[in-house]
Image 1 (spheres, rainbow, N blue to C red):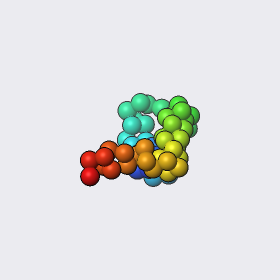
Image 2 (cartoon, one colour):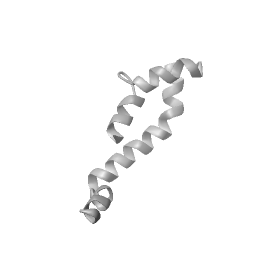
Image 3 (spheres, rainbow, N blue to C red):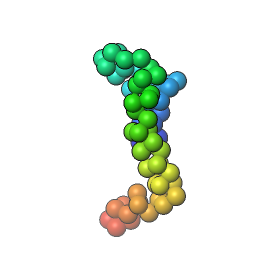
Image 4 (cartoon, rainbow, N blue to C red):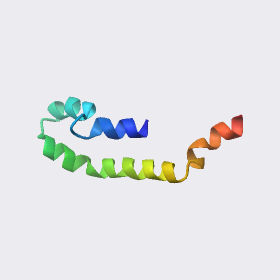
Length: 64
């Protein structure tokens, strides 16, 4: 879901980006520039979960 979120926030596919951009009444480049910190956070989180999968799998492994 983290990667899907990243894909929906970035061009060229960016479904969420193209949906939100008209309601914000801004240009695409302005949206991307303002969303850059959030995109960086999503990329860092995805990298962290790839490097250390136990963070994500802690609860399922505890329960089962």
